[in-house]
Image 1 (cartoon, rainbow, N blue to C red):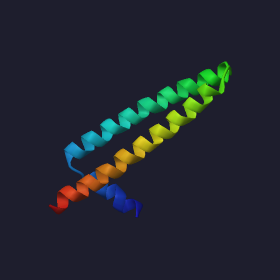
Image 2: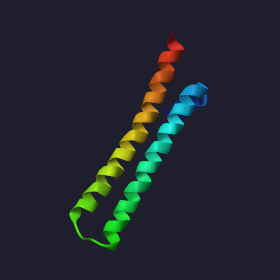
Image 3: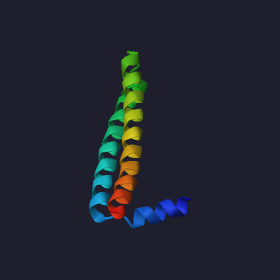
Image 4: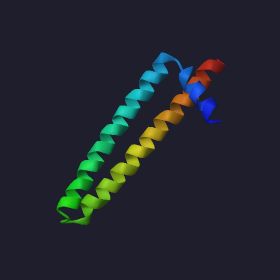
Length: 82
């Protein structure tokens, strides 16, 4: 199963890979912002809004990363079938 996914990623078109990696970069930026906000909460725990926003941004970054990966696989499959 994992070998099949790896082979699908290796055989993707260049345009789809470019979009997928751009999405991963966007997701990484969201992760970095979430880490900074969480670090600010750890250093100076003034309010729980910082904690909540750090957790929400972490979930958002993870969701975007997975979404870009799944959408890239689906788009490649659709393009190759037509």
